[in-house]
Every structure is written in C-alpha cells, then in structure tokens.
Length: 213
Image 1 (tube, rainbow, N blue to C red):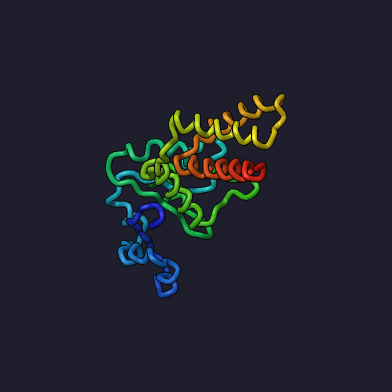
Image 2: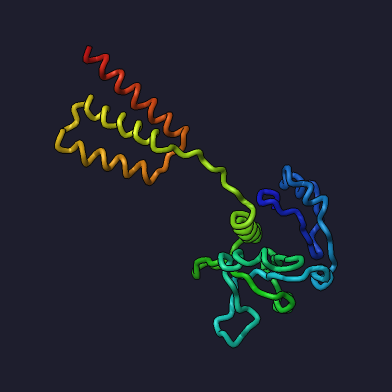
C-alpha cells in the first residue's frame, strides 16, 4: 500500500497485529497504526459508496450474475470517475470472499491469470491492483530531456567519421549510416545519453588518429 500511495486499510476480524507484523511492514508501519478494525463485513462497508470485490472464480454462465466479472485493466480506466468513497474488497488468503460478501459489492474484479493456476496469493492480488491504479492515475514518469536536430546531426557526423577512420567498406557505409539513424530514431536518446555516445565516438576517433600518426 505504501509503495503505491494508499494508506486507508480496513480489516474485518483479523488476527492480532503483533511485533512480527510491524517487522514485516518495515517503514510502512504507519498504515498498521492507522488500521480501522471491524467485527463484521457489513459494518466495514457502511461508510463506503462503491464496493469492488476481488475473486479468481467467475461465472461461466452469463445467467449467473453474482460472479460476472470485469478485468483489472478495464476497471482502472474508470475507477477514479466514481463519486464517493471506493473500497476494494479482498478475501481471506485460503478461500477468498463468501458469496454473500460478493453480493454486497457493486462489481466483481478479476485479475487475468492462467487457467491451470488461477488463484493469486492475497498480497500479490493487492499489489497488482494498487500498482495498476497507481500507474494509471497517480504516477508521472520523469521526462527525459531529448536531443534536438543540432545534436542529432553532430551524432550522425561523428558516426560517419568513425566509419571513415576504421576504413569501413565504402559500399556498406551508406546503409550502415541509415541503420544507425533508424536506431537512434527509435531510441530517442536523452541529452545525457547523447553526451555519453559523443564521448565514446570522440575518444575512439582520437585514438585511431593518434595511432596513425
């Protein structure tokens, strides 16, 4: 939960949260300190507006609606559009949620897994769901500063000069230069990557020229 910026944990009739629990939590112990405990599932959902059950067992027949499921990747598109408090409901490690608990939820979520072994560990299920929510709605990847036309031209010129210095076969030179250009086009190197490559080419060309002299 702490990894993906979630901090509100409800537990229904759990085992004792002892020293081992805190030890395993490492730096996320504040989540344990702020857990809200409930004696029954019904009590835990009273202040929640939209409930999403999780289960690996879905209905095979469309006429049996209880376990008609949506897939995780489809749900994360819309979950933040829901008004009110949203609760993700995870079952017991050994046998998940009861049918009566799923019936109290608005929708059932399923994480696609292999038919040969569909059930996930509880911690893995929680991790996948929270990761998907985080990456879709909260995470902003650090933007690399890309190189411009001037830097690209210098890079291509240095590559061409390197081919010349190593006496690369003339009939292959043009195709190889185009290949390098396409590789750089797909890679879209950052300024740091550009300067590193330029340093490699510059040193290589300098050493070759010095050996010639």
